[in-house]
Image (cartoon, rainbow over all chains, first blue to last red; front, top):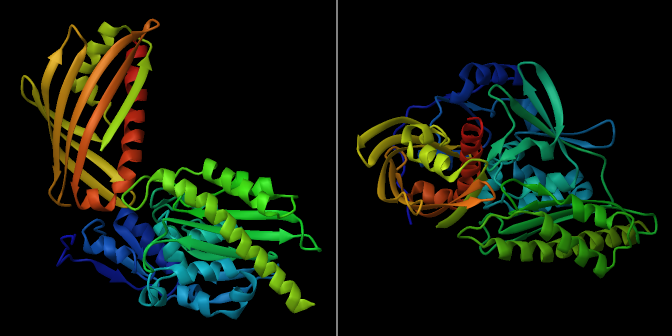
Length: 300
Length: 149
């Protein structure tokens, strides 16, 4: 069913050149400003009249936000305005954080991936989006700039409620900070059509022992499993210190399905989503493990 | 969509009934409600704000008390609301009943609601969860009001 759209609304587009300038403009606009970081989700809401900001603050002229740079600790800093396409094409991310590339590849259509950004995706806080689950599993943090300076929080803490973040007016997400790479990771998504958001999506990251048999630690991020993107911490704990047998993955899937709280909507029922969380934890785990083996063969 | 909510309050059935039947007082506990005006003996108008993610809706609502049985402590209320800016509307029938429960009172509300238009389409999955959280806020407010008497 087609929705009625808004034809003519006067909204200014501000184009600051620095983060400091953007923060100042956002702070001045209070609740009446919206960050335009690609606009692939926001402009849909705008067109339907769901959001009616006085001004958009566009990130397109802020170069600092567009780069991917190594961090001194061996991690990676991804600027908030880096597009999904850049993430897919970046060899360093592909080699060290494959779950993030899997997730970026799952985002909507090629056109959207060319313009849509990692920061925009995270701040849209759609519980069925893909990059949030991968970011959670990989243990990412986000850097937030505000009138008081910059702060860093775990990405899990960014999501406040359904499509709501903890960002205050005047605050801007400036970067996603990835910790040093884990042994392996993967994101697997369940959807009916290619461009759909996830019915359920599961990201798994693994730190394995030297013999590749035991899980030293695991990260599991879920999409489509609650009002926000979620971490399946019970399932993570169940895998820690265990041999990664099919039984261990079955158990982790069962725990994840129990600890999540999926929405019940026209896309899928809560019951179905739980079942799919259970299955897709196993699938994402199997893919991450297979990748770990592949890496071992390459290095041998 | 059908919802069933209930809560138990540490007050007598008679006090709980009186509180909930005092519409202006009761409406003060409805999250986001404002501008409550009595139209006639059984009809009231109010504005109700609700937020689903980035979408803020403001429904102009008319509430009609269709049936009331003070002896049986049951009531049927019909609500219609419209947000013309967002092209969305809500229609709901609420059946309320209350029973004595170990000195306190258990109130049960069974709601049959239709949310139509853009909000119904976009926020469908969230409406049930938002109804739960609004009812929880309503409940804690009613409890505070009644139990502090």
